[in-house]
Length: 132
Image (cartoon, rainbow, N blue to C red):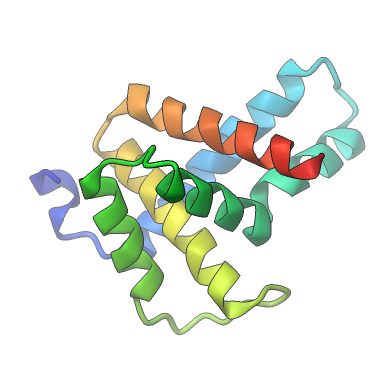
């Protein structure tokens, strides 16, 4: 963790991470050859839903895909007290999804593009595998 991200709380990391992840997912969906916005939205939903993000981060932790620093950040973000409450998700799933978004935000702000893209690619693969 550098000075860039050291003083940013996990909620703020999740805030930027949500936006960054959404862009990558939209790009992934468009690259699939579909250009109808309604179809693209339906395809993107499975990747940006809390349960998909929670599955991805839990699997990456279990697989030891994440570094110690990344796991530490995920755990800190997962355990962070938040004023916002999940609308349509189990609170545990919501906290894991927020932790995933914080990780994405952290990697983005650290300008660690290679690792950011590795983590997002692995998340996409896990979510797609989870559909089957």
